[in-house]
Image: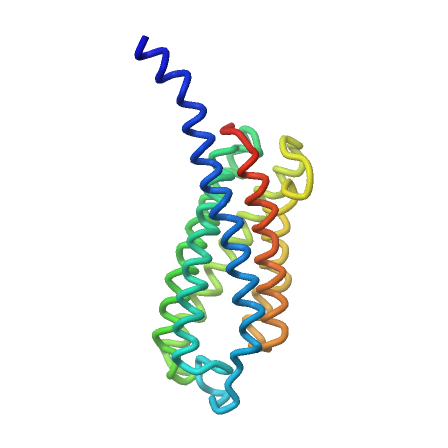
Length: 214
């Protein structure tokens, strides 16, 4: 009797965990949109352009970096949810690159915290160079997972609706908009890129909350 109960309730417990991942994913998108829209508002003209935190004060940079670090952790949970839901079927490359993307989100979170710590340093400092490199590598890792796994998910057709495209969209936006925006440092470009990238996680999260474990 006990064994039968455990077997029967297991799918429900697994699906509940998947809903948690989906909620975290959607929350990451909302948090990212808020961060993107707030950045121009928090612009500080007193900050020199060669300072790492530019155009934000070091204190504001710390707060924003902390928020973005949390966002990346929540995004990682979303991609872990995709791994659990398995909308890509048995495609090993999709599973492998999704794991690479999860690691990329974790590194992005660390890079954000380091970014807040070096806010007062010059953009040409050794620390800034290392942090910038960390951002670049982590961004490419998340883009790889989004592009490869996202393409497989769309082709497999296990998911339908907008959410089925969002893993792929996150990779495309990261590669085409977010990475170039971070390289240029242009405030408007970075704001638009971060906002659009973040928006991909909201429908993805909603799709995860309605999915079952694959």
